[in-house]
Structure formats: structure tokens, C-alpha cells
Length: 121
Image (cartoon, rainbow, N blue to C red; front, side, top):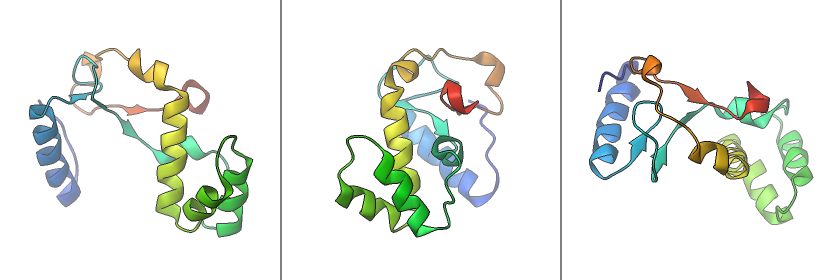
């Protein structure tokens, strides 16, 4: 599959994607989507307008989310990577039906495509 990734991370990424494909993962938009499914995301598109460099702003944002325990919000707010991971997981869970309805998109076969929920596009 002709995936182009830049730099050292790209070389590692291609090897990881190849390995995951051999283990049964489908990679959107290259493959016909099925579970388990890999999609590329841009966490900033999923977090909205929060000031990610500000711990208090991250904490306030997370505390506004429904069904999130305060101690989990505090743990994720302590680190911007943890913040990205938690928000991304929550957004993807909220849009799980959209993710399961994805279709293979051959027009993106060279460069790939970043998934985002409709409201983030």
C-alpha cells in the first residue's frame, strides 16, 4: 500500500501499520473498514477552543464533560498528551457509529485522510 509518512516517525509508522495490518486491523481510508479499525486523528480538531497549554483551562474543559469522574479529569488535565488522549477517546466513542459507517476511499490511497467528526470539519 503506498502510504507516505514523513521522517523517522514515518518510517516507524509504516512498519507499525504493516504489522497491524498483518494482525487483522483495517486502516481507513485505505482498507474496507472493519474492526479492529485504525483511523488517523488530529487531536486538536477534537478538543475545540480550549487553551491546551493551560492546566486550569484543560481541567475546566474536562470538568464540563458529562459522565467523567473529577479525579479522571484531574489526571488527564495534568498533562497535555493525556488530555489529548482522553478527549480523543471520548469524541471517538461518541461518534462510534460514524466510525463504524466509514467506507474505503480510494481517492485518498496515496496520502491518507484524517478522520474528524462532522462538527469539527
